[in-house]
Length: 182
Image 1 (cartoon, one colour):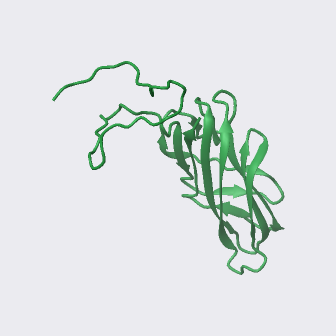
Image 2 (image 1 turned 60 degrees about the vertical axis):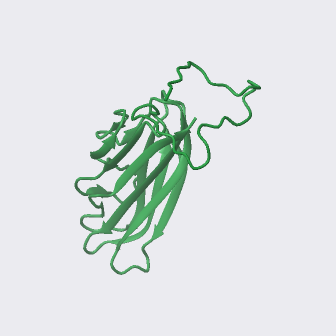
Image 3 (image 1 turned 90 degrees about the vertical axis):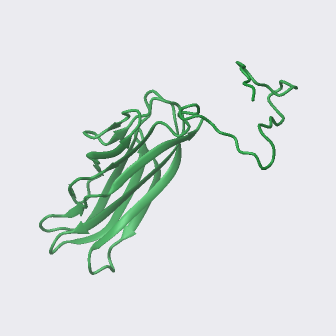
């Protein structure tokens, strides 16, 4: 068995096109741990560790205050913002489970994914015919980020006839993103 040491492998045309084949059909190729890194980084997964109250007719940023994963420390649990330090396209998703309090009637809940101050995706839940007054809202998007100043966050806007506690976004609602490419 021989080792091959090189600094660069290019297709013979060197024009950025063509196919470079490593191995043959039926063979497996082993890539050492750590040799390919950062393919889906930065990445994070955050969740609410306790309920968050949402006031009627007010756009409220959901502050997912606990993390399951944050590869590059780009998610801020105090502001709810994900500010990746690597430019590229990111897949982002969130889910929020909401419940209106006793004697409260939520009509609509709007869930937003925002890049900086611009809405990049939104969804709506109509509670008017839901006597239990609870439901979930989810959304996802692919967003281009500049790797310096762009950030992502999620917001909720609710309308209804509230008396008492208003809308509660339940614990374990989550917000996630990861880089999918340049």
